[in-house]
Amino acid sequence: MINIRLLQLGEEEEFIKLKKESLELIPDYLIDAPYSATPDQVRWLINHPNGPVVTIVLEYDGELLGFCQANIDVANPKRKHMALIKSMYVRRDDRVAGQRIGHKITHDLIEYLKTIGVTYALSGTMIGNHSSEKILADLGFEVIFIDEHFLLKDDGTYVASKYWKKLF
Image (tube, rainbow, N blue to C red; front, side, top):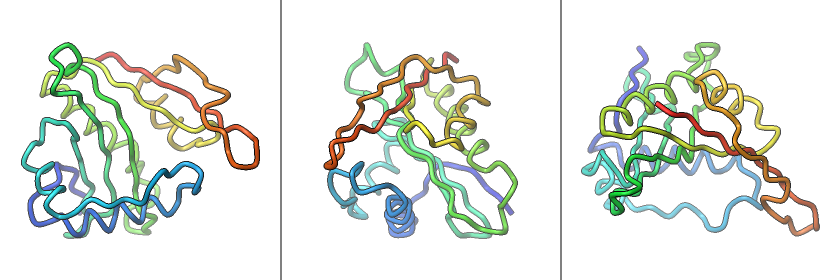
């Protein structure tokens, strides 16, 4: 059975493993440093579900298969109404294939953000990440900016990205 909810205490190690798994799919030129969160750091985030990092997870039969995270600048009262959706990952698994889980988990994150006073969200995608672009567009996000020179790779070529915004 599919359950989408906040990350809970006791899931720190499993979440760290899932987060590292997600980063294996990202090209090296996009990663500044390896993911190094400790269980204590993840536990701290779990105990602060309204920010600075909100983590929604996908559980299937007791196993974490995905997550969606947003950052909120809770220290700045002028910015705590805005969230930056930074990462979403769903493990390829036949039990959830074809069920639009990426869409559902991102939708549920947005719904949670609304309950804690967030009024709009931003996100970014690398151009060509069609699945993420489709999820954001389907959820009502609009492209607000395209950066053709987002990142300079070692070979001298650039990676382009799209920036998205949604008002709630």
